[in-house]
Amino acid sequence: MKSSRISRVIRILTTLQAGKNYAVNDLSKIFGTSRRTVFRDLKELRTIGVPYHYDARAGGYTIEPEFFLPPVDLNLQEALSLLLLAHKASNQIQLPFRNSALLAALKIENNLPAKIRQYCNTALRNISTRLGAQAPIRHPGGLDRTFAQLQKAIAKKRKVNISYHSLFEGEVIDVELCPYHLLYNRRAWYVIGLSSLHKSIRTFKLNRIKELKNTEKCFLGGEKFDLYDYTGKAWSMIPEGRIYNIKLRFLPKVANNVTEVQWHSTQKVTRNSDGSATVEFRVDGLGE
Image (cartoon, rainbow, N blue to C red; front, side):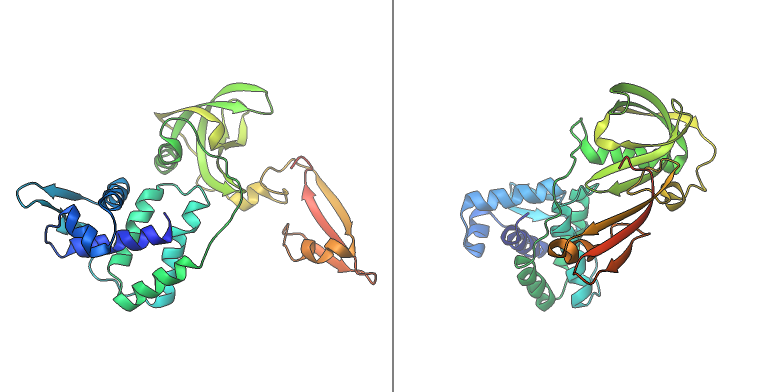
């Protein structure tokens, strides 16, 4: 949602919170916008779950009073950091239950002191995030449904059945999975768990899951699963069982750009007299 629309939506929330009924023409005059814009903003409220309704007898819109939070005591930095995550970062990463997060942010924003709310709205107009391409989930229900099913299975220690497009096998495989952990890594979500097909802990990319079914079959184990023990010294997330000592030399033109990033936990940088840099890693596997 763009900053200008966020501001209008917050103003509509604040106006309707007063408990009065406002017709579209009233809102249009208050905010200096067209009726079409008011309807579009009301639709945005409906999309994220704000429980407003039209009272035909009164001829206007109002919001259910139980929707609103009691006043929250946040300072300027606390408020701005929360709104930055909800309004900016959530547009760039695949955030599960994004609409719920946005709705929570709107509730919080609506209860901020006027000066803090105004400052945050102004600040957000001048802040952008660009995190690169993502791997969207395209099957019915999208990320919210897939994430919720897996999170439920992990919490209740229940097995799931998945049909998965495996790039390694080059076909769709059927797996009974004991899910242990959900991970967001480099533009995509993954589930890590014990695979019945591979007889070992494997990593599955959520956007390659073609079908997912929860079961009532319980599984044992998994409570001691540690992501960092599992990934070890893998370059990203999939260890291969063999450690390689990697040494790379970067020319002066790119040395600073490369070395200002911590690419791996084992990274060691040596600056050379000619301006180049030698970067060393100890990596488990070369596939990634």
